[in-house]
Structure formats: C-alpha cells, structure tokens
Length: 63
Image 1 (cartoon, rainbow, N blue to C red):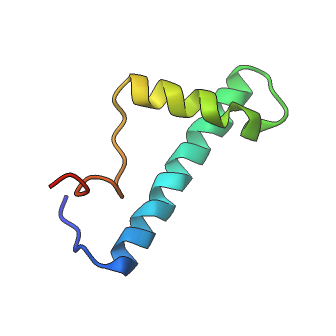
Image 2: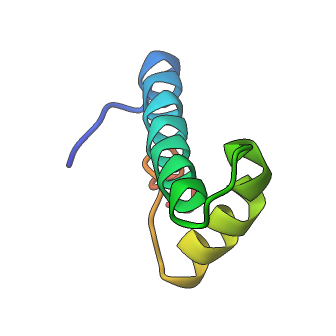
C-alpha cells in the first residue's frame, strides 16, 4: 500500500493502528473471559510484536 507522508495521513494511520489493536484486545479479553479488556492491552501488544504484526503508521519510519 502507498500512503503519502503527510501529518494528516500519519494521524489517520495511527487511528487505524489503534482500531486494529483495540479489536484484537477485545477479542483476546473475550477469549480469556476478562471483563476489563484494556488490562489485556500490553499482553496483546507483546503477542502482536512476537508474531510480527506490522503497524501502518511506522512503516516508513526507518527509510
């Protein structure tokens, strides 16, 4: 995918990243039968990084 490197596009991609991470966290909390889904956020971030899930807003940071 190609996205322009503007402040607006970076904000938009950061919101998309947060949405994806939030959905994964809610699914994980439901799977683990946890009421407070935000408490699983750090665990889901760790798992996502461990399995190589890429983030949209950081794709061009190292070029």
